[in-house]
Image (cartoon, rainbow, N blue to C red):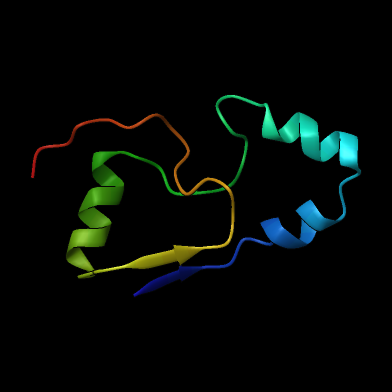
Length: 69
């Protein structure tokens, strides 16, 4: 299991209502997260990661891409 603690929730709680609303409408979402590329796929495979958890509104940084399995 991979747990990622980025501090997003703490910083989000400090935003004003207007800032939180602006962030909600930002596309693609600007947040820390995992890259969707072959390097990350290889890392997760080699470390035998079966699940992960992240306390943010976005787990991945880029749009979904199809990777060969």
